[in-house]
Length: 346
Image (cartoon, rainbow, N blue to C red; front, side):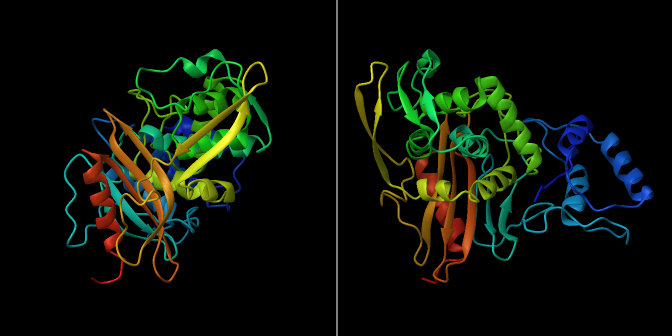
């Protein structure tokens, strides 16, 4: 079902609204909504949503209104929050945003600054995988251009070179397990025709699923000042990506090995390990919690980021997101603090 959220930019809303199937609302309600949109203003990394501005989106998403003619919300199967949800016992420092969503009961158990724009780093690759799967099949053959090596110094790669060929399935494994930036470029160019065209599709998809405070500039998450998201939008993106069984399968793998071909047709072997320390048993989840999988992201500007799918002993699922942690140790400490809210008592 097409999901829709109110964004502050009316022109963006009109694009996202095209083709959506909605229930008819009264002319008066429609007029009120248009007025609210026209009066709204954009947000950026310096000045994120105010509570007043976000309420416009929250009311529409949740279907909450004092007007009996309010149309039903388009997020009936999503968690929605208008502000912070801070239970006692968790202290996450300023500059870091975080949430844990109970996806079975559709509620946030913790939410801190979840509508504040942040840099996502390689969490971006969840949207890259989502768009690729929506527009291509796993057996699609990809061929690398010279741009797979045209990356900033120190960028994570898996050794793909110009002329190399592999399937989309192989590239997605390298993308999500090893966070390979060369795989991101290879996917974008082959599925989208060009990186810029693929990124356009990423931004369209973000609007369609309600991640209206997100903007992508590349398929990898390498730093760009105009490439941003929020903890809440990452919840929406990850939640949507989990609808694909292949993504659930890949993000659960601690390692991966495959064979692909170089430009001359010779075999190339690659073996990679997950960047998710839970999956490699380097970090333990709280007692009673099982981390099914997730995606990491790290740049100097974004800090340390992680989103995971975890389950308790009853099999109930939870999505956790942490953006902007100062270092890796703190990142996993915060993630365990979030899981402690539903873990077995010690």
